[in-house]
Length: 288
Image 1 (cartoon, one colour):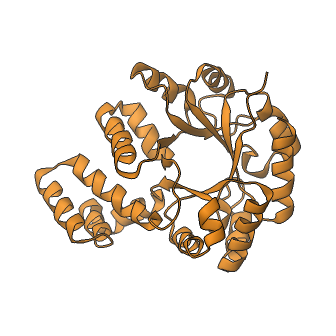
Image 2 (image 1 turned 90 degrees about the horizontal axis):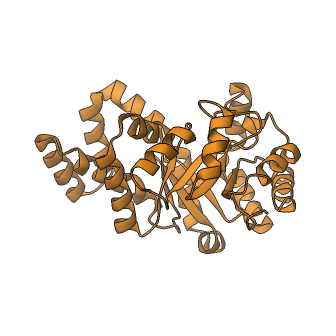
């Protein structure tokens, strides 16, 4: 028996040139969406079709799009924005160019006086949680004028927490997001079977986890079978990403497979045209 129809939300990687199979295709899309009107047209079309929100990283172009959404009452009142923190390349590049401490100070310039004082004190006292809190708040400041949904932690950071069993950092992140922003703290992972075992060991059963789910095992580490077994036993809220395997799969075959997995609550779809938006949405809803 199938669960209720999942929510369908729009991915945003196509707007910044992300394509895990073809850099050339990613560059073509990035050029297409340099014009922010083209982006807003796709987002408005998605809303009209039935998509309920969109996921954004804190990539500079994404922040420009978020700013435009905040000015559109129709979009802003009915479309949830799901942050994915942080835009990891920004941190890698910044740390390489300025050193980690230099990069942290560069980041806090985007905050306020209180942020600068808090982070400065945290660096001096080596209070890692205070640094994390300030960086999260600075990142989420960009979302203050839109309706925010679950705040997801990037898969690189999530999988580091899981691998190193950083229980206190995990618990701190969950508590800070829920207490400060009154939304759920979510996690993105490329190793769902490992994460689900870790969460189970900590008695975390109401989590929101975003992970690749597709019929060819694309990005499903260590393998598709262990992930599907873990998904079957999962008690939290599951968000399916990479469902089209970066364009390798067609919507029809992709969502026939997805619809047979009863634990999926939300599906993320990255689309760059109205035709693709309609086809994906109809295939998803039609299978439930």
